Amino acid sequence: MNKKFARRLSVLGITLSFSLLLLAGSIAANNLDKHKNSAGTDSPIENFGRVNDFLYRGGQPKDGDYRELSRMGIRTILNLRADAEPDERSLAEKAGLRYLQLPLEPKAYPQSDAAAKFLSIVNDRTNWPIFVHCAGGRHRTGVMIAVYRMTNEKWTVEQAYQEMKQYDFYTRWGHGSYKDYVYDYYRGLQKRGATNKGAGTSSNRRQLQSLNFPLKY
Image (cartoon, rainbow, N blue to C red; front, side, top):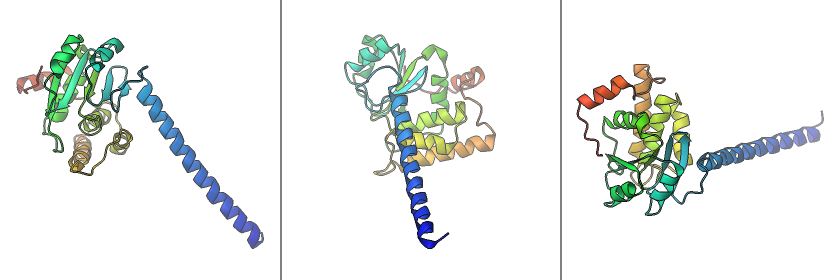
């Protein structure tokens, strides 16, 4: 094999590798778009997406969005904002939706019981289908959906964090504690050998109730 031919093969190999990387990125982006739009609606809600048949996610709904969520079949709104909009409960209830609030402070490492509270709500079939939101649908929502993925669906932390980034999660401007929480939570799951166990079983719910967690209904 002469040197000229070898160089051509090398260039061809590099070009092919680059093309495959671009194709993989395009496929991943298309899959995310399909995932986000799989609810069967072009929702105006920021970062709206379907996690599974009974769990949806997104940013803060506006006035007419509650009626649209109800039309889709959503039964429960779970608001993760400590800085909640003052009229959200009334808007949700007027649309026939149940309203729950699990307040998480913006830009703050979630409280130690946040994951258990969240899982007790989303694993409760009486709340299904449920729409979970924060302000933009990327940080507090991203963290809690990651908790769900790792606990209930056996995702690795790398898979969960990749999905967070696909929904526009970032660590700048004081949001780094959310990433820390997700990785800490996963390490805790591994230590307990509980990556394949949900936290929403009836026994866990009874334990949560006995602790009198201040969930807001």
